Length: 361
Image (cartoon, rainbow, N blue to C red; front, side, top):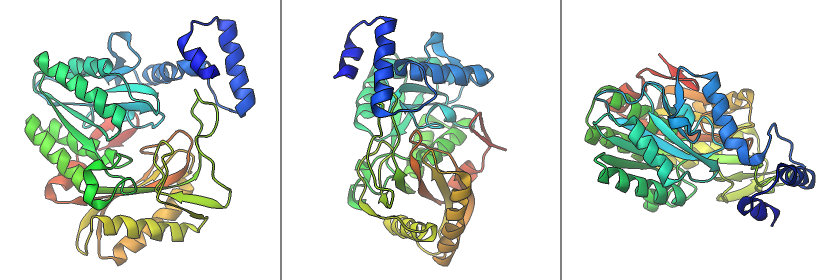
């Protein structure tokens, strides 16, 4: 109730501070923040100050972030966006060989159609714009609205929606699945194709191919805390883990007792490989991703077994990625993503890219 009152009434600074202190005391939230309602603007402002050669806030709007050199003449532009709390998704993949702009919503909440429309206008060079984002209802509604308005203003817009999370729908309903860490592969492929000065139709085609050939599955060991809520977004016992939990805390497919790293790796590999299905001889890119709190040391313990199991299944491994690629605030957990490669996807995956959060030369 207090949060709802705070959201709709003009409050004095003293009252705001009182509510913030109450939230922190009642829910024992410990974060490096000021006013939770300023969190998104302060984090984007910090990123822009740290990386001024890469980013600018369009017309000073800290929710509308574009490449410093946008629009790039003659190039199809890639626009993305979604709720904050997932860095480096979304803003972190704005850069050369990646996306051209991103609109940023509140933590785990969709940005507005107006923000996406402003991103679109700022990055369009006349070659058209590809919208690329994860399948979440709010994002789809607002981005579809922005696309329609942009088209009415003379900007051609096409859309690819990422749906790689195998826990969120059956294989037969692949197009209804959520987008999770596999969006990294989509950014990489789309950005590289656009850098080759391909047409909007070609950029859309190859990006959709990347999405269609990507599968992901995560496991959560602990929750995260959204600043505006002030308490963990789910509860899980110290001796439990949840397979398939979403990056906003959506319910997974199975809650089980905690297992060893090798057992977790085997469970994820079997589920992801069987879902495509991947078969012996397939060449794949591998992403082992931290959901926020899981350290690199543990990711590499997991990758050691994942690598072994994939090779035992006859898969050919190309360019593994291990690290923080799509997070859920400070959630303790990880995810595995596989993308089946052909010569075209491999060429684009290997192409250079440069942002403050991802560099490949």
